[in-house]
Image (tube, rainbow, N blue to C red; front, side, top):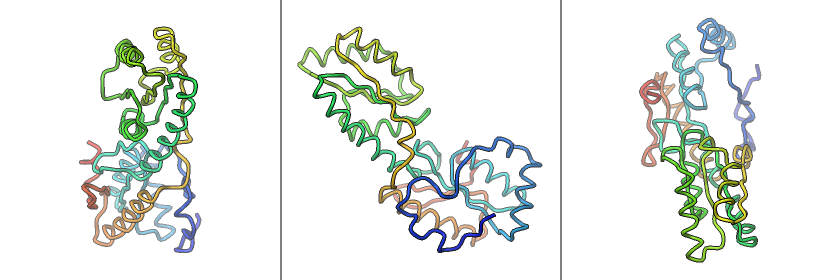
Length: 253
């Protein structure tokens, strides 16, 4: 156990990642494991817990609250797929990273008259891909929320080529399909050199942009206010630029 105070967070607002650390802990689903957690926190005179994460973290916070230890959940993921909030902490920083990568890919795609496929994180949510594609001026967007047929994409690409288009960027959310296989298919069908780029975990790092810094600061302060007012089992969000809070169960269902 490391004791933190206000000096512990000095000069960290500009740093990426989290000095607190992050990990999955499936055993936390077991009540006996959660009971040990509660006992340890009480042994160290902790009064409440603020949990940063997604649905799994939220459910853990709800279960601890039901055991008499108040918790508040904050939405932290680049996927922007947490209910009860318009935006999650980390989303806008990842968006900036992806757009910068798309800009760089466009440089080389234009030079070599090549089609570039860029795979963006998001799991089953296309928010990051959609926003990055719009900001990066991508010609084609493939999202998990929309039915995708590679044949339709090829026809659209061919139509662009017929109009004199020399290069193109295809933004696609991870897990929709194998991007290397898609690149091979497009190149075979169009005759245009096609390359796939998987951005991967680079999207999860880097100095946070101003909006994320402000959002995290506001949500953190608001969570303390809620705890001081006696709330527990709630999650914080931002909707229409106003801070809100919901019951965790309502949010994840």
